[in-house]
Length: 165
Image (cartoon, rainbow, N blue to C red; front, side, top):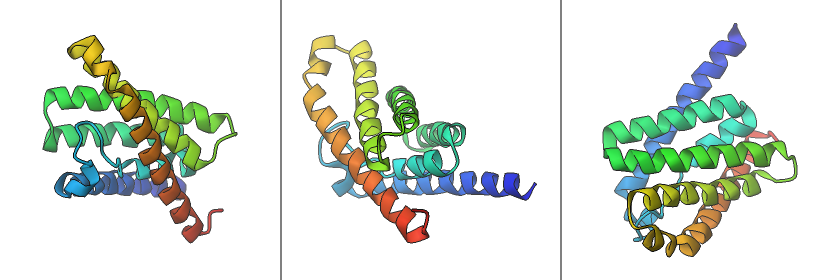
């Protein structure tokens, strides 16, 4: 019982930290890089943490709740569609990359960042002009890999500080 209660409390805490990090990202323009669709994705540090410390089911649940809360508080319906597409593709990619047991958390997060942006781009292509959306692909993939790797690195530092590795 204690283990179940502890896991639920940790998941709730991670959702709260995700929400706080999303708010910080919104309020501080430095984290938005001045380009549409490109953000640091700091909330994904919590998702990576959940994936490596709790499991895929918990990480996916935290990710889903994060997207819904951000939509309800900060976003629009279209923004939620972009977030859902990005989060879904990213989550699938990170679960598969972790299960391959070849990638470090940095590699898993970098792959997730690239796939998050790819998922959003697929959504944009479905909602807008197909060719125009894909002209943004190289920039989004590069930024996704870089911000994902940075978030994976931050998770690795947290993990080390906690004594998990």
